[in-house]
Length: 410
Image 1 (cartoon, rainbow, N blue to C red):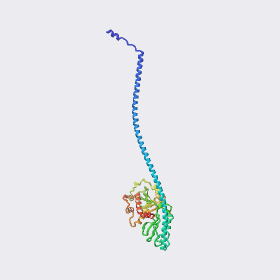
Image 2 (image 1 turned 90 degrees about the vertical axis):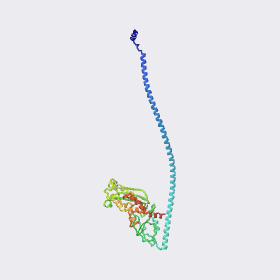
Image 3 (image 1 turned 180 degrees about the vertical axis):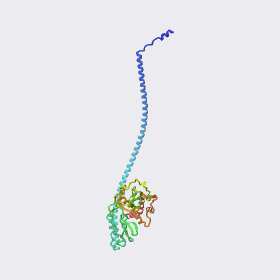
Image 4 (image 1 turned 90 degrees about the horizontal axis):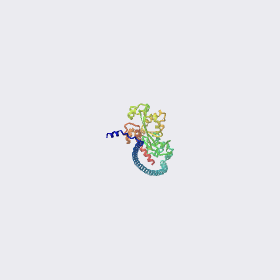
């Protein structure tokens, strides 16, 4: 036993063959290839998972796109429907425009015919009146028909020598003060005949009359003034640093509102102005415009052109116009610009109110109260507010004249 152990212990191991080494190398190579394949397999699995996620996301995006496509298609259908409706309305409007155009053309033709007939009837009436005068009064009179037809034909003259009262000859007529730049005259004597003259106001010397300012075209060139311009009025007001421009006071606020044919056009201008001098405390208590507020506002020279363009050729209406126009002229003279009277006509509503309401208070507040024009918001004077109130008061003051103009031409 012991000998066998010793014999076995001392035995040498057999040497490895070349085939064994070759097998080991092949085995190692295969293991390396297995690791490479395993890494590729892991990477492929990861790419597969990413592809699955991307496909799921693409599916979601596709669903969302389908929803958006449905919305866009619905919007397109709605737009097409609205376009069809608008096309139908456009056709209706076009048809209405054609009908309106034909109606306007027809009415214009009827108006021309009526105007011609009115001329003929008016001439016949005046001729009949003159024939009656000659028959019953036995006196030759100035032809009122010729005078009136001359006005319609654009060669009208102030009828200062024509009265046509029952005393014969018309010598009772006396010149009256002009209402702005419009020619006016008084008619004396009871029962005076007034064919084409409409009353403006009552005075001690009689009624003040004026020719109606209405119509279009060259036949309304009366007294050398285009009466279409006379129908454009600008209601005007200013606020100042003090009471007198002769003491060097300046304008701090100006506003103007346009009216045509007794209707507001919506055109208006309004400026706060840096007077380049301190505001008198008494004036500030009236309009509430302080030196700090006005500092940095435009100077009058910067707004003068726009203001003059706005009032040019119109009838400028102001309450106590000598105050507003005096300050305007003082500002314009500093810029070597024409004075207001050379740019437009001026109507003073204070003078008109004094003729209509003698021996009564005729301030703007008093007139508002008299004619029922609301002025509750007028805690302080303001150019724009005062111009609006003046325009409303003027419409109420002259409503009788306007009604008689409309009645006459009807």
